[in-house]
Amino acid sequence: MAERPSGGSGAASADAPVAELVQRATEQITRLVRDELTLARAEMTAKGKRAGVGAGLLGGGAMLGLAAGGTAVATVVLALAAVLPDAVAALIVTAVLAIAAAIAAQRGKKQVSKAMPVTPTAARDSVRADAEAIRGAANRRQP
Image 1 (tube, rainbow, N blue to C red):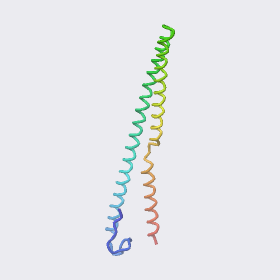
Image 2 (cartoon, one colour):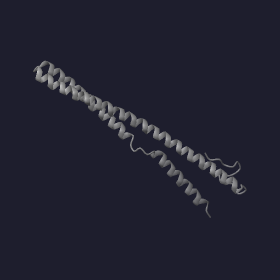
Image 3 (cartoon, rainbow, N blue to C red):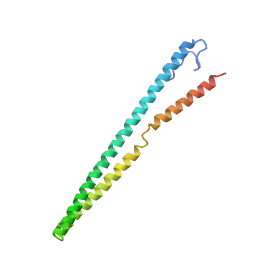
Image 4 (tube, rainbow, N blue to C red):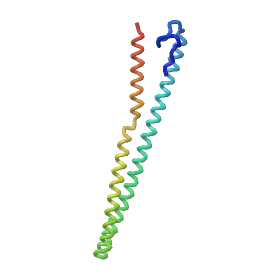
């Protein structure tokens, strides 16, 4: 990122006109802002994907929970209608669906919590570090 004059120690040449120095600073700041926005966009995309996966798993868990509830109702009906074998089978299906719903919901919750906070924290921290570096460089250049 740093463009340095070919014959110096890294500091701006005393012979360089102010307009050229301002132009270089403007180009570097523009590039820095563009890079920070790219970082923020990438971070938000990743978090959005993770939240989407978590929401899908939560939805799947909810659907399995509904199925478990329907099966529980069928279990009660079968238990009342024919006191044993059909009711035992329905109860086993209900337990399996309930366990699957709990697992899916737990995984979905974990995915959603990993996506939080929604703010692009890495980009924010990078901008703060850049601002601090610029402030430090400006303070060193002042007489």
